[in-house]
Amino acid sequence: RKESSAASDVYKRQGWRPAISYSAGIDSHACLSLLPKNTLVMYHQRHGFKSKINHSNALVMLENLKLDGYAVVRIKSNHELIRTDYGKGSGFSTDLAVGCMSILSADFYGLNGVAFGMPLENSYLFHGHEGRDFLKSWYWKHFNSIFKKAGLDLILPTAGVSEVINLKIVDASPHGQLAESCLRSTTAGKVCGTCWKCFRKNSLRGQLVQFSDEVQTFLKKQPLKQAVSTIFALQKMGDKEKRRLRKFSILESIIDIDVDWLNRYHADAAQFVPIPYREQYISKLSKFADKMSESECEQVRKLSVYIQKEE
Image (cartoon, rainbow, N blue to C red; front, side, top):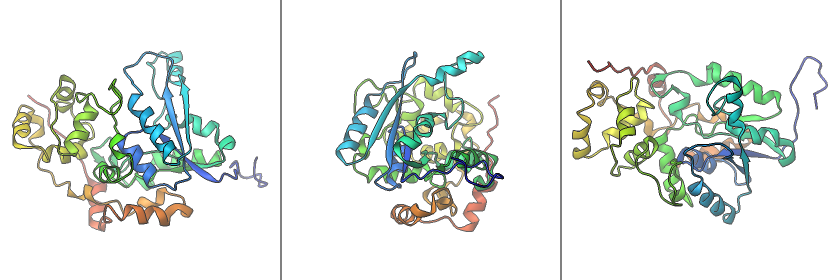
């Protein structure tokens, strides 16, 4: 329904709860933990095309969330095949395409907004290695505007929160032990241990890691994927693992960069949460981290992590 003003193309919805486009991964679960309990958990079960994805871990988590009183909706979809009509490989058309079912069913479920677990490393750090003011970025303005026109809030509770803090939130939450970003494990409750996601999350937790062929390929790439949080994780490694890092000469110039500010949330974090939810949001977040200082926020904005290629 369009509002009465002919000058506006914004649709009005009378939704009463938000939804989260939930992946059952660590950042997504931290996002859920920072939202109200009436949040609808919507899981996009990628289905109907060949992939290495396995949903075992996610399905166990969803069942536990139901037992904990959350409303959970699981929808199978092969919409990623749309890209193949244009000569491209299957996958998401945009970062937020994973939430398409939340948008399409917003009226049916009484939604007023859709949340995504985008961490600071992908918002304030473009591709994890170059800083920007995300609140003023094209990305935020563009997609926030599109959601507004659909009568929905685009909610990004972790946009100002690092993966480091997200991990603390998850480890302290009910069912947090089930939150895993790995999509390759064939055994519920376990991870493959060899993919890049497992390497990063295990190293952030200070656990032993495997330098699989996939991991070594990523460590040789320039720029380093999700550079800042990866650097934080590498700094936490034991002496044995650090000795193995010496073979990746491109890491030498960045391994000692000060990234301690990842332990604090960005001062603008609450701006990505609707006003009615902000008080409870800040109350929850403040239990795990302090707010960045102005100088740290400026440090994030100006950050640029470039790695010289190996000879």
